[in-house]
Image (cartoon, rainbow, N blue to C red; front, side, top):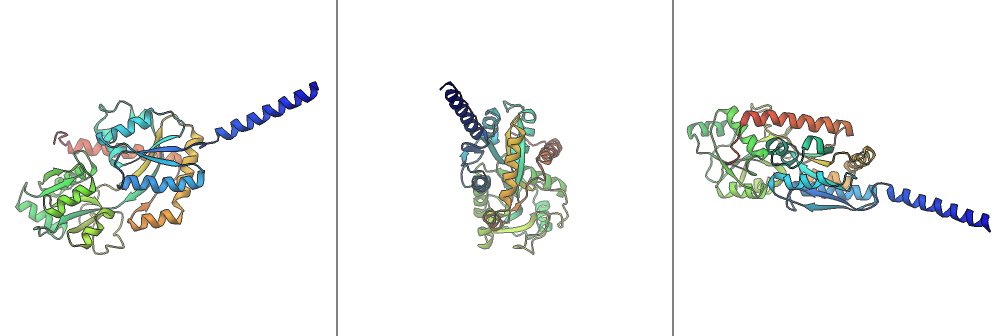
Length: 328
């Protein structure tokens, strides 16, 4: 009986160890992805598309939770302060994941460089330099510059708010072109910016191509240049901004995933591999293709770190050059 009891105890111990091991395998429960914008925008859509594919490969739900406000600071802080176990992540874009840490380091209650780690870039959204067709004649970059020089300070451009990358892009473009334009910020994102242009409250803007397609087709907006590595197949007659004479101006609008620092490397590796696997899924590829989006993860987990560091360094230079008035 004693031997039987000992054997039974060993079996129970082994079983409990196997259960604990199974529970410890990441992920063993739903994962939260914080998005720093309201539902329906490009970042939210990106998070949901990747989350669904990662659910299929990892066997757990990836639940998207919106936490908009304060240039992404609220979302960044919640993610960075969470337990570094891979169960709280953040998907943001170039504004929240690169510009905000550079522009507002004193407003952040965390040290971005020490408390946040990059999992991977996810996708790149091409943007258009657009003009309204509402009582506005310029049909090319050259015509826009000529018009602005004849009407200094009267051409109105809209952005997604003070400190957003469309704000910086417009300011850098203005300086390189030698023109002066009036800033009309709109904090409601691409939808609000498009409305500003359509009704004529603003005349110029940098907006992602996917959001503007219907208004371009309707003749309400006019793309005069594209921010992309090459011309878009759907818009073969629209030159890149580099072809229009402004190489190096403008932002490739990327989306990326972040995690709290000190998240175990094997967990980060699992997430990175799931992201790469997601990019091969036909459903995700088709969804992004319709939005003119390039699915472009980093080459490795290590390269994801160096890539984000290089983006932060690039934005430090831009912020130092432009010196925008944050009270604008």
